[in-house]
Image 1 (cartoon, rainbow, N blue to C red):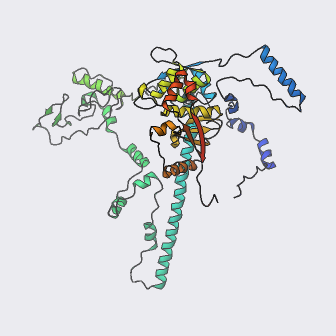
Image 2 (cartoon, rainbow, N blue to C red):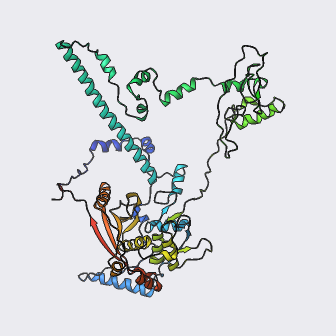
Length: 557
C-alpha cells in the first residue's frame, strides 16, 4: 500500500505579504505574542544525572581528527575532570506509600530533566504544580501540558456532539422528505380510505432529535408520557435561572422592615402574622390561640444552608437563623436587648447589603511549592546502586540506607501486606521488574510504569516530553534451570486469549508488545550470591526479548 504523503507547503501569495507589510502599527502592537520558552533539547540535554567526557572520534583518512584526539586526551590527563557522580541527591523512604520521596527542588528538577525519573505527586507526570499555580494566578504567561490536554479533550467532545447533530439533522431531513412524498403520493392516487394527516402535522411529528445532555433529559419514558412531556416541558437551566431572577425575594423585603416587625429568625411579620401554632425560639411547641384573628396567615419560611468549617449539628430547627449575621441579631432580640441593630445592612447570606463585601485577594508573593518527586523502588535502586547519584535516608533516624538493606526493603514492600524477610524468593516481583528496568536503562531506553495500558513498563526512545512510548513490556518469569523441574515448581501459564487482548490494546494506541522472559536462578545459588552483594545476585538474571505483533490474514500475506 502506498503511503499517504502530505502536500508540500505552498508559498504564500504576494498579496498577503504586501497586506502584512502595510499593517498599521496599532494592529501589530495588539497582536498577541507567544512567550519565549527554552527549547526542549536544551532543557533535557543531559540523558543521565552524571557527566561523561568521551574522546572525539578518530578518522584515519583525516589527519586533523588525530590532533583533536591527542588534544582531548592530553587535556583530560593534565587536568582531569571531577569524579562522578559529582552531586549526590538525598531522598527519604516513605513506608506509607512504599516509595521514595525527593523534596529538594533542585534535586527534583535534576532527576526529571536528566533521565525522567519519578513523577510529581500533584501532577500527571512532570512535577510542574508550581508552574500551573503561577499560570492560574496570572503571574506567568505560558502553557502547561495539563491545560493543553484538557482543552484538547473539550474540543474532541464538542466535535463529537457537532458530528452527531449533523447526522441527526440529515436523518430528520430525509424523514421529512419521505413524509412529503408519502402524502403527495396518497393524495394523487386517492385509493386509501384512511384519512391522511396534513403536512404540517407530519412535520411537527418529526421532532428534532436530541443532540445534547439537556435534550436527552426531555425525552419521555413511554408513549403515555408524550402528552405530559409536551404539556409540561422541562425548562433548561438558563430559563430556570432567568425565571428565578423575576421572582421577588421576601428575604429582601424582610430586611427593609422595622426591627419591631421582624421575627427572631429574620423574616418579616405584620403585626400578628406569625402562626400561633409552631415552635418558639427554644424549639417548644406552642398551643393555638383561640383569640387569634381569622386573617392570620402562616409565615412562609425559607430553607437556608449554612456553611461552616466545622459541623456542630446535623439537625436544624425552624427557628435557626439562616446566617451567622442573623444569628447575632436574633440572639440580641431574643435576649431583650435594644432593637437598634443595623439590620438592613445585612443580606440573607450574611454579607453587607449596602457596602460590598471586601474580596480577599490571593497572595501575589512567593508561592510555596507543595509538590515533591515520587520515585518507584526500581528507579530509586537504579539511581542508588546503578549510578550512585541518590542517597536514600531512613525516615526515623535520617541515616543513609546501604544498598543490600535497600534492596531487601524494596522486595518486602513490593506487595501488600509487606512480606517478612524469610518469605522472599528469587522470583519475587521486585527483582524481576528491576532486572528488566536495569536492562533497558543500560541500553539507553527510558522505562516508565505502564499500568495505564496494562503493561509492566513502557519504553520511550528519548522521554515522555519528546514522543510517545514505542513499546509495551510484559515480564514473564522463566524457570529454565534444572532445580525448578526437580522441585516441581509450578510454571505460570498464559492463554492465547490473554495474548490477543494485550496485543489488541496496544495496537489501538500504535504500540508494539515486547515479551521479556527473565531466567530466574534457583534459591540456593541466589542466596549464596546475595551474600557477596547485590551486584553478584543480579548478574544471575538473564533477559530474553520477544517482540509480538498482531497478525492479520488480509494484511500479512
